[in-house]
Image (cartoon, rainbow, N blue to C red; front, side, top):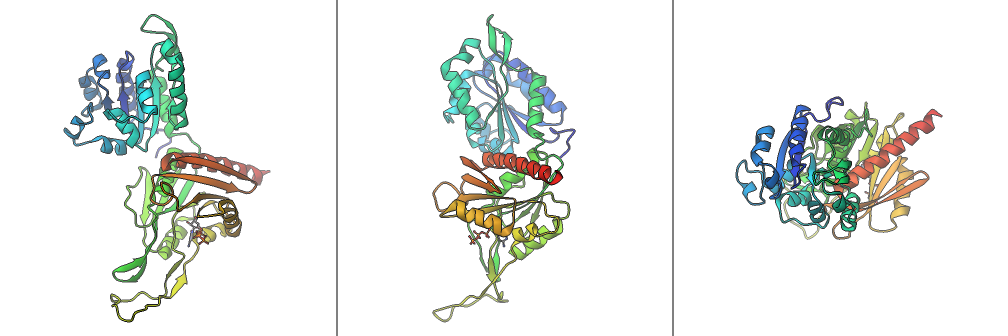
Length: 408
Ligand code: CTP
């Protein structure tokens, strides 16, 4: 990560929909590449009425993707691969029709299907006739997109291709590039070093068996990614998970709780923020059998011993980083979470209710209730990536508040 080149090596997916401003997207593409980004382009059918895919192909150096089905051909990037590949999706120009289809969850062309399938931040640069922009339904759709966490850039006021004047002009490419840069360099955690644990741990019983839990690591990985986007240096200590390392994240893989504790200790020195999302096993088998345990008697007693509490150890350091813990509770969320926060002496706790379908362990969506000394905030159910961004915003505010309190 380089604060002076926020677009260096970033994967940007540029969606082009059918408006006269599509010609400006060619310039946008050129500018994004000039700043070091890798850009791939998705065009809707109507976009191709205004611009030929060849222009974008030549400027991006990649095949242009135009159909939900044909996209499986060529370089093999289907809509899911493209959705995963992107660090950011920007749709410019975005027509009224595209926004309507996006906000209502349609997935019947390549671009909206990618919008559904991606975790990346999304930006939309509307361009349309001023009357269409001011139309009540369009405005409702815009509000809904914003509610879904999608960032709108523009439109600007001015004279329009249709001869009218008013709001609806697409923001100029230079300004769009600045908005994209700002998105990557929101700077909330600029200069901070995040150390974060994620995933489950595995506590071996014998050479073939272990005790573990349902944690997928998704929340921790989403936070690591959001922290990089907010300008932090990130070290991720990961238990065994099936997830790709987010760009610019330094990842250290571990298996057992004690290994995780050691890895945290050895990376703690320059951490200014510690977030414990890992579902660390509280206990491990007292003895690990050297050979596979054979079945025999009708009962088998397992003796377990306590593991170190990584979060509590970090918080108890003489000069601890800002510490954030997670709490998974099935009942009395506020009481248990606050108690945990006070017991472990941590700055902020993020609690979620587990045991409900669709959220929590291994789900793609979650809700979080955040508690700190003298305050709390609920983050409504949304994707873990959106939630991670909102959490980072609250953490940055609390870190700011804490350092101001310490200075005064
Ligand atoms: N944690 C940790 N090291 C451990 C255990 C937990 O760092 N050995 C961290 C987790 O990453 C999480 C928080 O502590 O941030 C969870 O607290 P914990 O008291 O372990 O929660 P539960 O296991 O749910 O506790 P309880 O069974 O008491 O509810």
